Length: 112
Image (cartoon, one colour):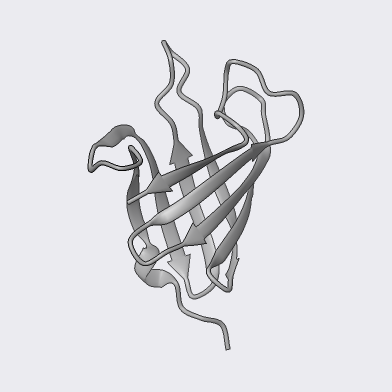
């Protein structure tokens, strides 16, 4: 039987590491039913660069895996979520050749 991760459903904001400040315009919204997830990821960007995407995936052993098809700039990629007691760590991996526009790829982000 799959674990139930539905308590993680809701809106999560990106935090500054080591403080309680958060980026109000960088968030993810999650909808989780047992071990299946779907959501929206939105990042505050420089100037008019505000990448956002919808995604869906699954969760197993506190690790979520999802793919996104378009970040608003024609990029696709994968998302890895680590579900912790007090938040979610998100690893963003953009496929193809990253550039200035789109999600900042190859990084971990903490959401509370």
